[in-house]
Length: 179
Image (cartoon, rainbow, N blue to C red; front, top):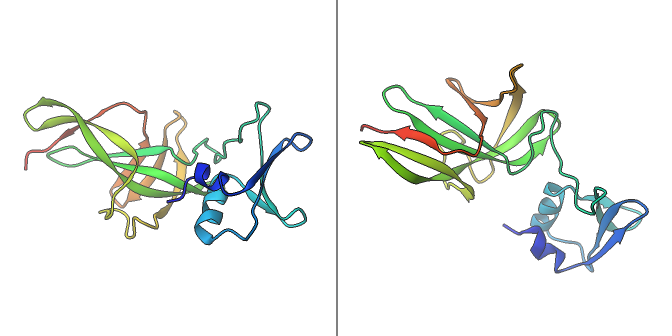
């Protein structure tokens, strides 16, 4: 995965104060992976200027792209499920699709504390994507899910026929396993 910081080393960057934006100029057309990363970071192609650009906020930093409920790329959803045990799975938003859908990929978790016999506190490992996912057919590509909100402020996505993921609060979650 190519990071935006690496991409910026390969181009000329101009801050357009008048338009409150940032423009990236490349000597040759960037490859698909670079274009994909530019788009994921809010850049759009300017056909007349032949550059990639994005708006900046008044502080000179990129405006964060969010959907109608405030969900943005990098946010994490937590799925707590199970019958005789509590399983925890985490999913990271890797793209926005329109105003109501997100692209998610399953990520790893790490144990932060053993709280008892077969009981653990776990936390999400941001940007550590699993090779295979029980819930997403192709975790490298991700899955498109609709984001919904409840009147009490809970933001969630339906992960499968029996469960929902809620927007993760960043706190450790308790997982139990007896088998």
